[in-house]
Image (cartoon, rainbow, N blue to C red; front, side, top):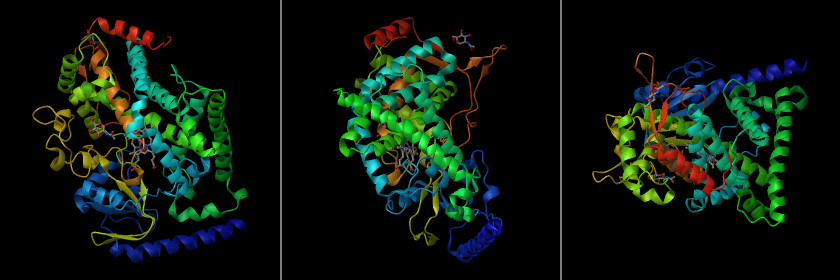
Length: 512
Ligand code: HEM
Ligand SMILES: *[C@@H]1O[C@H](CO)[C@@H](O)[C@H](O)[C@H]1NC(C)=O
Ligand SMILES: *[C@@H]1O[C@H](CO)[C@@H](O)[C@H](O)[C@H]1NC(C)=O
């Protein structure tokens, strides 16, 4: 009986939705025509959809429309369209898609995925204070320490460079948030648990994991609990994750009560709000948004070095001139290393880890360039397209070339329009712009400076003496991407490197 009722209600709602879209179609932005009910669902490839979107942008213009099984979606394909809507109208373009299962798994507390509501505002304000340009400077010592450990691990096990990047960014985030000492190995049970939660969220958010995520089936979220295994499982996961996270934050409170004065984001959040549950989930949100992105971005950096040895040579000449072989780089060298800073910008431009950013959702009807954008439309920016536009970046837009950000005197040029002085869009837009961008930027800077100071990063040579070059168009699937596994030859640049790293470890009291 129930099944028949549910099915009939479902069919009626689907039909109403289909007619609504048909009625509005002539006012919506142009776009590829699709099937009557499922729309463009099957025209969007799961692998590297930005390439298909890029073609559609070239054909339909700066904004095009997709009907994804009833979900109104637009893709913005120019810096101006992206900035006009997501930055300049941020007050109505800052919600997220209504992810039902991910929000159940996190109890609606993981604010990177929630609507721009009061909870989000509170959480984001707390995170912003802990990660602002100014506060980010307090983390320089942590970041230098992580880079020392990273170099040390590269010296003994260069083959697993990605693991070392992953360890370093996980460890840094944990130090900042919970005040933990550096983790020499990322197989800590709590870390594995948060990583597992992240995977659960990302899998649940991927299209086609759950029917309820499709617009036509959103009504399923009103079904009684006993009918929905997905709801019961997600709620169970929430309880389990919440216990671990609250435990981690409660430990910080205990340390503070015992007189420990070391700083941490949790400590500050608890001091401000006295709300353990919110502090625990705010911290988890920051951790989960921040730990993998930086490591993936560094994997792209390694690939760029293999493919563009000239850029590597120029960067190393700068390091040799400013620092020399006798000491490690530090943040004090920042002003004197414009080419390294340009390399940070260029790696975020050439292969940003989120080619489509994170989706924003429009909270009321709006008009742009004469087109209607209905309330609840999901907006993607094809950041990949923006970054490969020859009109903006020149004919070599496809290639890695940090020099594009420098003037004739080797100084950083003032920036490209609508990029908020970054020269790229990889940190996102409007009120949702990456809150960890200063910390991320600094991590990339110090890692890159350390790596190029210590190593030559080159292509491996095969048995016939030929260079084995990675294919930089291949990457993993998902909202954030890293290169598919590739190998490179990492060799120390001189005899002193190992000794200086060992000394730096000893100075910082890092065990082995
Ligand atoms: C290279 C590294 C990173 C890149 C490329 C990156 C990129 C992004 C992007 C594209 C967004 C979505 C922006 C939008 O919706 O328009 C985002 C959001 C976010 N990022 Fe990052 N990120 C990085 C590192 C970090 C780090 C290190 C942290 C924390 C320490 C962090 C914390 C966050 C948080 C909490 C959000 C959610 C903001 C919100 O929804 O209001 N990210 N990031
Ligand atoms: C990142 O670093 C570059 C180069 O130093 C700088 O121009 C940019 O403003 C920085 N961005 C952030 C978000 O700190
Ligand atoms: C790595 O580079 C070194 C030094 O240039 C060279 O001797 C060695 O054969 C290279 N190894 C591989 C696997 O390419």
